[in-house]
Every structure is written in structure tokens, then in C-alpha cells.
Image 1 (tube, rainbow, N blue to C red):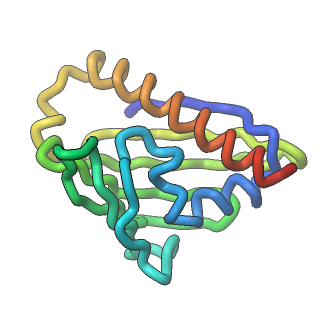
Image 2: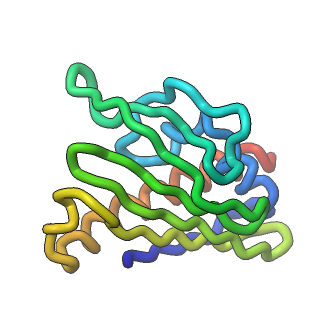
Length: 145
């Protein structure tokens, strides 16, 4: 499991508002290029974001499904990026009043990506997820102004 953490200068409810708006997913998730559809019940467990991964003309249509949700506190997702595989991502928010600490954990659960040596996988995931949290911070902090 790979974990990254970032302090965001916005209250937890505003950070979670970005996470709960499936249409912003491609704005903060590195690799997601467009959103095709967001289930009306998102972010309830079982709901999904239908997105594309990659860049044109090599786009792959896939989905991200909610595994668990505690509004304002936690969002767990099953992310698909076939043909590479699937992973689980947990975003945990610690409310500090006017700011929030966000912890993002990710690990591969299926597909060829499981064959990547764990140290190499961790390097790639840490870099990607640091950037994802940086983008999430921009969106949440922009909403708090």
C-alpha cells in the first residue's frame, strides 16, 4: 500500500465537496482525461464515475466505483485502468477546522500491474498521488475563497 498526505487550506466539508462532485474527477485525478457520465447517486456506495484514461487518440473508457463513503471523512474507490488493472484508493480527511489533512492510500488489486515490483510501484504511485492531492488542494482552496 502506498500512502501520501497533504494539508489543504480549506475545511473538510469543502474538500469533500470536490470529492463528491464526480464531474471534477478528471481535474484532480492524474491520468483521467474526461468524464463521460456520473451516476446520479454518486458518491453513494455502488455508484460510479464513467471516465476515460489516456490522451487522444489512445483513450480507454473505464469506470471508478465507490466502495464506501462517510461524507466529510472518507471516500473509498475501486479504480479501473484496463488493460493495466484495478486498484483501491482511500481518501481520509482529518478536519482541523479551517484546514484539512488528506491521506490518500492506494494499492493494486488485480491485473498485470500486480506484477510490478512493489518498490517500483510505490515510486510511481507516490509521485502520481502527490500531484493528485496538489490538484485537489487547488480545487478545494479555490472554493473556500
